[in-house]
Length: 376
Image (cartoon, rainbow, N blue to C red; front, side, top):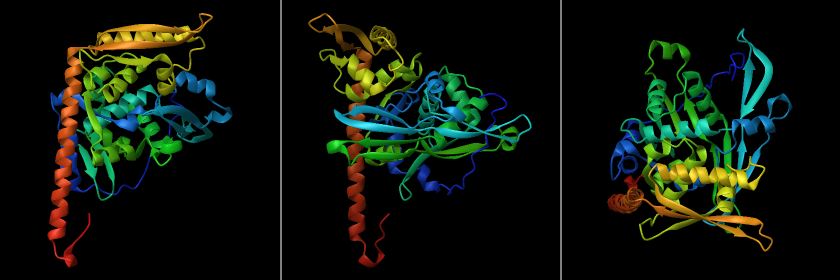
């Protein structure tokens, strides 16, 4: 955004997060990993399978209507082989002139690659003690952080953003909404809300006085639900953030969530058509061969980052030799196979601990006199 496109700050009344939300059994499971904690974070199954950051800034300019508006974007994808749709509504901002007064114009943005990096960083910060929170009574989760802390963390991951870029990204996440809907047998599976359902920000005066002033964000309900049900999965966060391209990040995320039985004797197949449909990151290519070339490059990047030892591609052609699809057969690295085994073990251990804790809570509840029982 230009200097003349200044936005009105977000202002919301925030219910204080209780101290016990920053330290509890459910949160402890989310923050404890098998492996080097600094290198790991959590992937959330349905949320991270949804192509929610796939509309690039360049494409947004092509879609933009008169008055700076963007249409509601509907993206079709599959999750666990069932059809889903994601309806994405952009963030709308008032534009302000050099004099600080509104111009009467507005502009809209969808979350894209920059916002994806910011969201990943926030989820990583949430695994730190006294930063992340899980508030079961009010069904909310998130983290508190300083803008300086967030910026420093992103720089350490190789992504340098100015403070104004961070603030703009946070506002786009807080003002954009997404509705995820299953179809057919899965129509009861839905998730609706803003990408970040709440941002309690620090004003400019406070930031100047103390760069470490704390912000607070509240995650999408699907993330909170995953923390509550222990459906998240650990993965190598540093590797993901080292990706140069958004498509490589998407591919790694898919392997983390789907290639759960990775081993040196067990390969994994992915089709070009499936990747194009479910990532929505190849739609900008007018020629299929250009999209396939971009995908080849992304797989080469994934291999260079140590996820794969090799991959091979097999073209599927029709009777007239027309290219119909490409199948990629993937061979995992020893390191990635070990990471997936650790993720499986940690997920199983956490679910066992969670079930045990719930059973103990139920037993304590039933042992109480009926007149003193309180459900939380």
